[in-house]
Image (cartoon, rainbow, N blue to C red; front, side, top):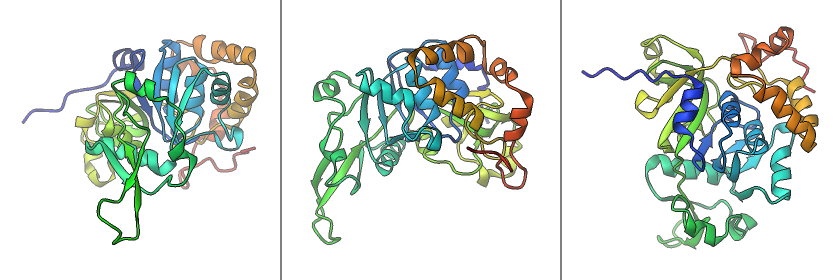
Length: 325
């Protein structure tokens, strides 16, 4: 029996190998939970450009990729970081200044689109979006869709129910599949062959992973081969779905990683201030990203007491007593 290959590599190598300029990429996580931030910072550090980005409901990762000048087109349901930025700051500025094209869908529609990609079907039906501007207004013009072979010809299609009215539904919305060139996730545990375990809510990560042509997984813990197999029911992704495994402790920081650490309100409040101005954000990029060679160097620059304050409590999986304002 063939043994699974070892997919362990550095984050720098994984991004260089699998994320090209103009690639269609998808990132996991939800608002300020389990965003693949180490990978996002490496993409910015390598100055990838004109990416077409897909996300479900993401916050910090989307905002920093847009602010870092990496993204020219975005398809998303919601871009926000909770109370810290109900609408992502650099995202909003890029839209207002005409530097970012955005196609919006409902949360349910985006989940179905990733699921369709994972299933290998061109679309899935739903009722979400009927009689709304989501169905009537396009962010991408038809000319753009026709010029990019990776894009469907239509944002979505509203059509008659082909099975009649036996279920009291006369119209349905067909939403097109998403098949990214690469999806990037941050997870709690993985082995070097690509067996993946996510603890807590998985959001749309599993569908995003299975829809992609390539998958990069960054993990908090790199575990010995065989340990995850002791509880196979707790694993979400098999090795054949994964192309690269990168061990990056604190790889979701400053967002949360359940059972490891909470989000950092000090960082997110400071980011809110620095992202508000063009010059202050340029300085933020220089000080926080470009001046550090990798994610470990970034984390080494942070006060250890602050990191201790967001370390997860073993019972709840969150930081107990954290001042979240």
